[in-house]
Image (cartoon, rainbow, N blue to C red; front, side, top):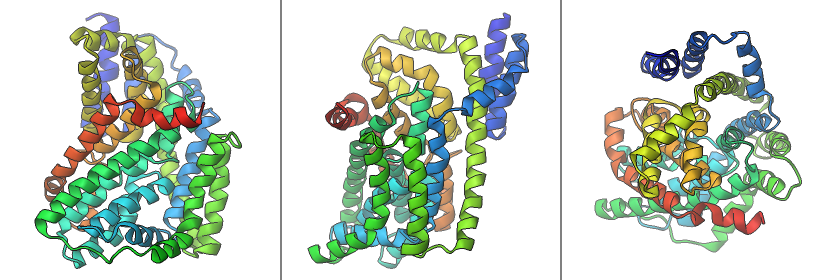
Length: 431
């Protein structure tokens, strides 16, 4: 085996072996990169410089702020208010509480940007509530975990910021806009699936729609929803950068959570900030080590080799697009979301662009693929959280989720082959 091939095997093969051995992803990335650089005779002193360079980005400063905003708002007593708002809007439908779950996740996802936070926060309220009204617990859990993926698409999403930076300084504002219609498409497909199942199982309806009740709930929830307006409108309008808007949103979230909704006291704020530090340390270490990994990929010309291998398999753009989705789905089964974005984007984005997929559209594809991965064993973190919240075996939750996997795959295929779903809104507003 040539030194070049040995280095590639050490980088990619070593990484996969370490992941399968359940090493933390950041350690797996770092160890594989160090072995690869040693084989190539690279100066290991460059590792520190590469790691610092990986996180020394003004755009990436938005990530800690968005995570902090989500933690503050998620712990600040807004979950119940968003559930009430969703109930006043769609609770009248067949399977009303399933519809409420899906719509509440759309609202909450725009605040937290995290599928795990959505599942833990809304699931702890909605799963028992749905069960009390006659819904099966496994169905309630399946609806909760699948709808939580809407929050990955609905801005502001820190994963979109990570993708934009990794892809080469794409417009964060365009990515934010690109997520709204796909997020609504995913919500609509899950609602159709829930309606069919609810009709078959004769799940109950809620109270009739009353405009006055809806407007009242909207007036209560507007303080939480305004955080989204501050970020998205500020970035799109050019008033703030993504980083500046995220910092302002943190201050706003603190005021809303402590003084308006009073869901947090100052002791609770410090506890939430402590949780944020734990999350941020994981994310930033991963970004830093992935910068070293990315340097090794470039050094070994892995993106070019991957492009030749995939295009050599087929020259049909449809087949290549399906293959890209399949690769991302498989990665989602064994890796978490951030490392997939950081590692796969430099390899797969050039291939996607070569067959006419816009980088913004591909970003939405990557994020939805990763979202589906969060629900699939053996490493699906949201699947584990949903099982824990519902106190159900993972196997039972997976079985109940099968119809919703189909809804998500249909949404993914529509996003892949109809560019306008992702690009219509950015092209309309960001001219």
